[in-house]
Image (cartoon, rainbow, N blue to C red; front, side, top):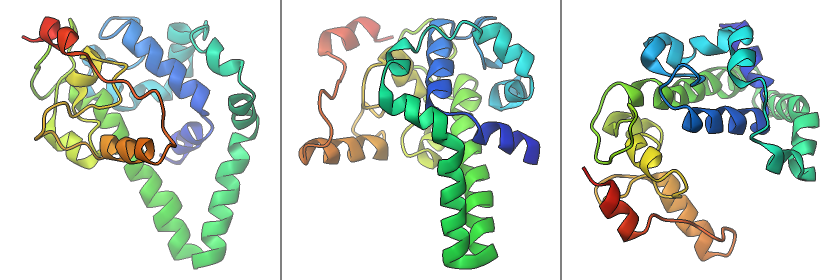
Length: 203
C-alpha cells in the first residue's frame, strides 16, 4: 500500500486531467484507463499498479496541451513533490507524529479511496437518469462521501457542468462551494446544462 501511495503522490494535476479526459473520450471501452469492464478492483485502483498499462492506454498525452502551455501548471508539475513535502513537514511541526499519521496518512488514504469510488462504484451500482451510452450511474452513498461527485451519470451526460447534483434533492457540496466562489467573484464562466440539452438526454 505504501508504494501505491508513493505512486499516487507523484502524480501532478496535469496527469489526472489527462487521465480524466481519456476516460471521457473512451468511456467503458478497452481504451478507458479505468473501466469496471476489467473488474471492480481494477477500476478502483488496480490500474495504478500497472505503469505499462497506463503508458499503453494514455501514451500520447496530447489531450492536455492547454494545461502544458500555462506557466502555472508547468510550475506545479515541476514542484509538485515539494508541495507535498512542505505540507507534511508543517503538519508534523504543528502536531507531531499523531497529527502526521492522521492528516497525511489516514486522511490521504481515505481521500483516495472515496475519490476512486467514483471510477469504480459509480460505473457499477446506482441508476441512470440520462442517455450517456456508458455504464455511469448516479450513486447516492458515493455522493454523500464525495460531497456530490457520486451523481456520476449526471456528470457524464453533461461533462462541462459545474453542478453534478442537478435535482434539488441531490446534495452537492462541491456545487454549493462553486456558487459561493462565484458570488464573491472568485469563480467565473460557471457552466450549467441548458434545458434543451437536458430534454434531449432524458431517458
